Image (cartoon, rainbow, N blue to C red; front, side, top):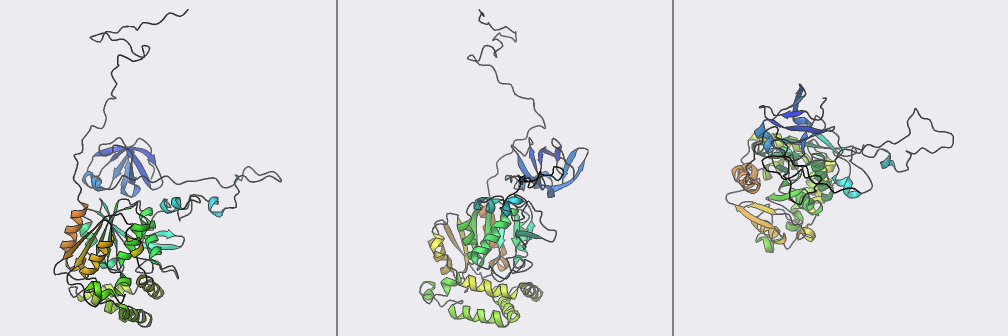
Length: 450
């Protein structure tokens, strides 16, 4: 698709929104338009066609206003690595492009996004590799994560609870996609994501989430996590606070807390997921994964789902790797976020259900008490899968948290004459062409040259 600088950018409903200032491999920079007061990132995926030296978008002006276009990624670094073949080196000469550092050889071309030796650059630099058409994004060399996007607007990422993948959220993403940019994904080892042999720690899963946000240029994200997925969200907010605006934890579960023998003291009742239950789960996962996962669907998803829906969720759970399920559960049930909770400055909203035994309100209250900026709410007549059976309450909460007062957009014509500043009295006499009234021109006085 050939696009040149200066071409006007037109929405699907015929509104000119700016001109192209730069063209890159996966985005345009558009400026000087009605919606753009400075350069804005515009994904090439939103370009429908190019005709008559104009760029036609697939979205209307109303949809474009909802899109997050405020973050412009840096262009990829492409450096020459070896001397040109047409200029052979003399005997004994040293190739100026040679380097012993394998990462510097193709700096900027690695799909991991590695640009130099700085860890921060590596963590925050996208790879500029297009997402694969089957909904996979490469977050590490040879490791693909399955994801999906719905709608436009403020970014919202849904973190599923173990052992589920992104399918458990349906139909919430479709409903929220009418007003927000909703991203769902499968943890490593679940659903359609790859299942490497090792590295199933909570920190590794938080790192996967970060790479997904970097690759998709997501900023100011609202992170919505359910059940044990709350541990991943908390680990992410602790390690990568710059990209997340708020956390919303639905029925959070921290197995290490409820597995403690003293947990009944602050819970007020015997926990449903005590140490003995957690150990029994570990054995069942190893010995009979299909039977265990079927029981999980019945227990966690609640009685309100139809039989075809339950069957579908169970089949999705079986897509993951057996070894991944075993190792992930071991990592989750031994993970304790207590030590870093007080350092999380991101606002957190916790929603508990009064009828939830896996995540009773007392657990949400304890978690809120350890976080500096936390709001704990209790949903009446609720169960563990709040977003499935109390969907309207969850949607109302998210709309409340993400609502931003709208500011009027000042419409300007496609072009405007350049404003010329009026001369001032103390201006340079050579530049100030006189101060005669009624537009009469007067030549300024000049000093004599000896």
